[in-house]
Image (cartoon, rainbow, N blue to C red; front, side, top):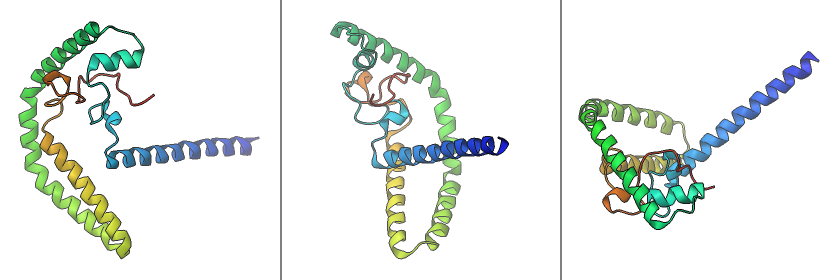
Length: 173
């Protein structure tokens, strides 16, 4: 009986670990392909309807009229602007701190990539280099967009953007 219980617990643990691996790989592939806006609660491109009120209505099946959806979006945008103004005093010191360590991070990243690349066959190196280019482009794109919460979204006239940072945008149902 103890042996079967041990086997059952081991099997359960392996199934859990396998689930974590598959889930993590799926998230990584979605992020690399640019189709992972749902990971960051709708901050990425491709959010449907472009307004927080419309998304809230659709997700919770509230059947709101357009005036209520617009009012909800306006309230959420005011709240987001207020939160951004509260965060702004912290943004500059954090950005300047990161700028001081960025060269060391880039150097270490390049060393790691060089060590990994040395272990790969030429065909594998090409795929690895392609993956790294995509990662670098994604990082550069995020740097070009500026700090999170600024720019885009229904609060400044750009449909389909980030919108309020809340808990309702969790991806397609």
